Length: 604
Image (cartoon, rainbow, N blue to C red; front, side, top):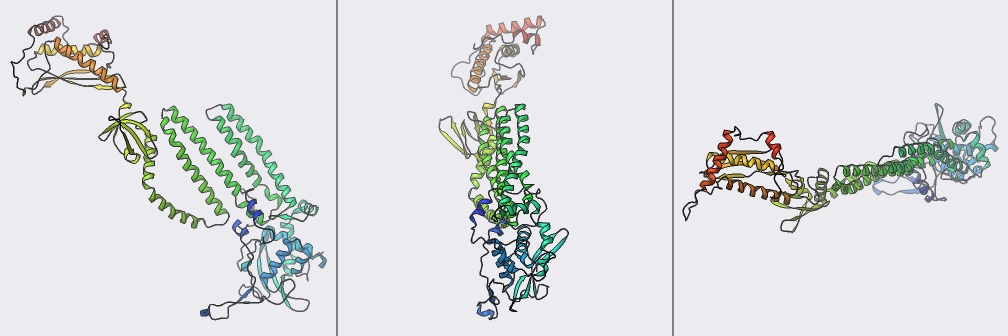
């Protein structure tokens, strides 16, 4: 007969509420517990065992689907007519500390050496301690037939309650069908089991100190622990706190001495959740010293407080990482992304609490697979309902972390332009050139090609100057050199790259291409500098005696304007002087550039 090793306790008289409150006192640390008998889950401990203790007559035809309640064995003052009632009566007696009555459920015909029948209550008490610490009896598996189980491989007169290990051996806890004084057969805990009680108690009893203390303090237990065990439990907890204190203080002192940006927060983290968790680990590794019952062990192994403290520690640790990343983003000039850390870490905290809850439910005996399956179906429904919101949130993550734009930046996206006013978790708001507010969902905005004008380090200046086709070659040479001198001399034009080239022959003009960069970042300032450069270009062209070309397709209503002949002759004479002096070059030398650099007054 396969019976789970556990213990049986009824809470009808004492109530379940104190037990539920106690689960918030302490929990286990996985992997640190000493080797001990398998404990029941908290769910099994809290399960109401008070079910009808009656046999069922199944002799009626199945098609009628009727069940008849019949009497449980012979009449007996102590209710020992069937195996289940015998064990229920024994547990009820020891729960009430009535060991004289509990001895009536023991077969005392063949006692261990040195014991007499008057020692029956003592043996009952010792068996109670053994079962409390080693065996959880599933009462539903015990027989309600007056003749016991018929197919358990045991003699007809015996039923198996469970097995208890002592050393390397396993001992059966048996019930036996024995005659009462009047010859009526009843069920008692077998003489074979009774004879092994001293051996089992030596292995699983309280020990010398526990035995003395249990006799000194009143015989009262609360949630599976006697008074002396509660006292030792508190002392172990205090000692664990004392042992953990110097370790935590030394680590905290070292962190404070380092004096880095997050040293204060790190110190509070060490003195808070880490200290409590370390205390629990030390406590949990030593609480077996009090010889706890399976009921108390089930409460410990529910892990309630351990899960709470672990979740607290992980949440505080996540807070440390949040502060670290906020500081890092601030140092890199990405303050806008800091606002995203709060909702992101709120999600992380919820996830931590969810995992802690799932672990706790698994510890107390619930089927986590069923819970997760239910949550998975609900999660799919929620995900489908919030698909757009999730897309927009991911879009906001992209905008905050990659930071293609920031609040206050002027940008172009698609066929729109505007200034960023707000980057929210759902949408981005921009103020257009028409001064209207444009709201773009983040999922859509993050997928666009965004040109951020605020990110410019400089502005390109690259006009094409179209001269009239009757401009002479020397005039073109003069204009090319004059343009270079003007650009190199201008304080707002970068020296490199800077090119002025006679690019080619247009349909109606000689085309000169200018390529350089204006050393400003603001758009308005760039327009102002470009205006100044354009005016200076016009002055140079006019000074050279040429003009900007007009498309040849335009029909003049008056006679065509002729170029200034005197200006032309003057320009060609200057170029001739350059030739005579050997200074006729189309590129300025570094010495010439250095001589004229930043000599032009601006604005001109």
